Image 1: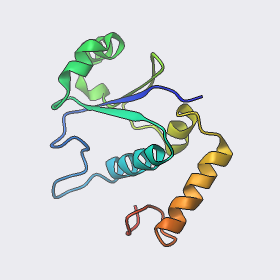
Image 2: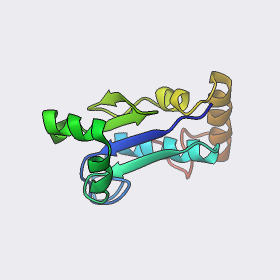
Image 3: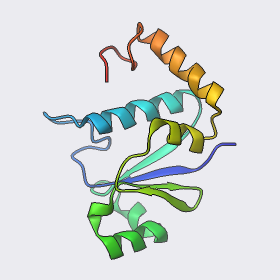
Image 4: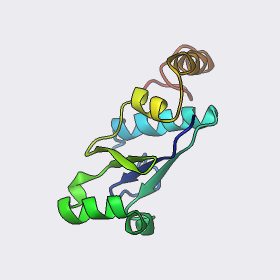
Length: 128
């Protein structure tokens, strides 16, 4: 069963955060893996504090966490109506599990993406 996964991220220069002269490797990992999940029909919604502030206001759990802890608590991962993780991005395995993938489906996705990238660890050439 697929889940509703939302990641509430700090203010970034663009919608993905994978931009500018110094690309954050953790953001690259998350963006790449979310793209892979979407290729499998899974959905993960990312909200950037600077470009989609209304999402932070409308989600009372996230809003309350920000009000009590401040923006340093970001990113917040919210799954099916509950905060699952704060302060760091979830591991790929956690995202896949929350998206409803079995271990076998995850391994199949990884294998398919390695083959598509010529044996590298991520699609689109290069290695992350």
